[in-house]
Length: 506
Image 1 (cartoon, one colour):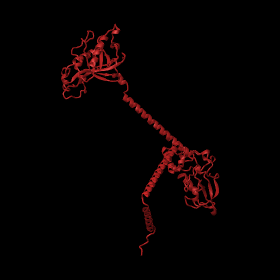
Image 2 (image 1 turned 60 degrees about the vertical axis):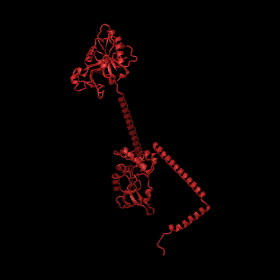
Image 3 (image 1 turned 120 degrees about the vertical axis):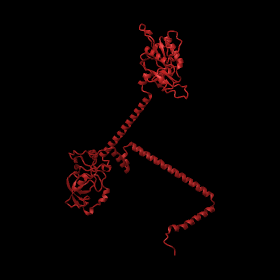
Image 4 (image 1 turned 90 degrees about the vertical axis):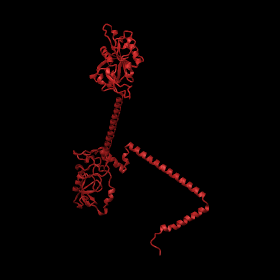
């Protein structure tokens, strides 16, 4: 049972309802509203809910209004109603109907409700027909409708003045279209056989306060999609950040060749170039001269390493990851003296192609043991590339990271493609996914080879069986004769295939 504080909005007006018995049929659900200038509008935004049926919860209802017919004992107010008020027999079928009745006492309320139930009314609206200030028990309330168990329709209550106005309008709009107010004008727009009756629109507050189920579903689905998109974005960016961090770590460990990585022009800073030894060219003994082309393959494959004590104290424009752990002690170390003498088998500068002057020319010896003029190699290393022009070995110390190096996702993908192209699977040993993927490929190839061998064995067994059956069915004489014929044909055909035809025989 609803509380007296529960309220609902009721809007009353005039509706034109098609007559379902008209010739030619027509859509009986096309209900038109008569304009207010030719009808009336009444509103009660604070109508009380005595009882709300479950079928009306959260729904708006539009119906036609009528007054039920009861056997009035004299105290229910039926006798005071106009004689031509609209009854259930004057309404078309196939439409929702709402009963309107005066509420004088609880016993009469039950009579009205029982009759509305027999008429098949969708709901019932009571209105007060009197006021009582001395006896509070005479004020209509939800308890007047009695027991609501099994009640299939809602019960509303409006003010008595509004109910009296509705009863008067029900008496005006109960006949034919030509007999209602502005009937002569309405027949110009509608079929004169249609019904013109008082209607009501019940706006349940729960229908506007509660979000419909479809919108709830859409909001939940959209929230799930947004969460999934954000989670995917976070996971992808986290993996990309980890890949960039791992690439920078491997560059600092000297595991990645910056030149091969495709970074824009990696050059040698001046503070590193000054640590590369400068020597006086002394030609080597011709008897002990070695071929540099053969030494190129035996050249050290590691990047040059620089000790911590050899690095300059001031290098504000460079950022390095050179440490005592990353450098180590392997590989050739630059000379600690700025000028020394040594014997070289290389007699010309590969850049300018000029010969070195023995015991006079100053040359710079790169970690790969190739020598160049100072002015030639310094300009090349500072402005062109950090690789030796001859052997393409890097002259940068192991673990050096240029300050301008910006590792992006494209850099990570390029380095991964480079490792795959060179087949250096050993670099992926730190990746568990890479090891699992390689193991799966090996097992797949092994199973494929096993199936191939099994098919070959089956083919060989079938060939042996067919040959055995053929030899068993053939006679011995035929077999010997065929064998001799095959040998003869092979012997005669051999000179044709082996001896070349140099010309026509004489």
